[in-house]
Image 1 (cartoon, helix red, strand yellow):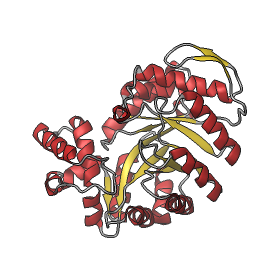
Image 2: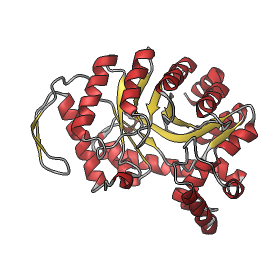
Image 3: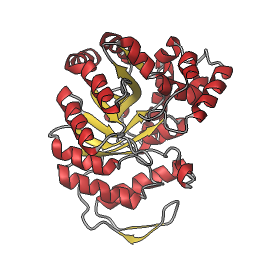
Image 4: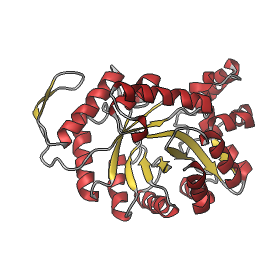
Length: 345
């Protein structure tokens, strides 16, 4: 069982490096660095983190070929591979909130497929001449170094199928933690793998679970409610108990806070905390005491075919984003990670 921690870099570089060292010290296998518009640069932080760690794999989770052209992504990966001895991976998706900078993600499935194929060709040293969503004319890298492990992050059925066909792995960012729904996305990955005559078991396949943990379980559950409010408004219809009136109220409240749901500076209306009840928290996140979190993860992943889990680390809200991230990580601790490995295989 491969364990991955995804960190949103709403931090100073020094703070992020401390978090990177902690993630490795606790025993995670992989560190994903979110690539968020307007936030500290994911690839710079990846390079810095690779220099202060020894064994953990580090990559973007996820970048996209619209804000970062495939030629740039290939060059960035090759640089990281040379720096780290290939201890890196490249996470790709179709992007989020691109309209804020005037970008429209056209033909996302085709664009992602072209990007993966082009990046692999460039890093292998090939000259690329193509015309499609992205066009190249006799283009090649100066220093094509490394073997790209490409991970696709998605909650789309179509892109999950594409990931099974062309990627080395997939992180299923379903947000909704239903075992049945996650299994449905996993079936799409398998369909893609069979189409390409690949063995699904050879891919890294993991659900993305938002995790907030503290000895103060009540505070952890309250801290994750902005995440849950966003997830419910986006994918809440997947839940049989979905209430459209609640979703509409949450959407209105979310619009009042013109910021990301994980923003450390956002101040959320009290009404949002009242609308997101305990049942909703359990269906869209993993939150509470270490014991509660461990039990919930095991319930979701036991008797499934996932060979990994990607934890989107949410901070305990105590007024300091950095300390809140550390609290979640330290509360989970080494013992819990060992338990998950032992039970899940």
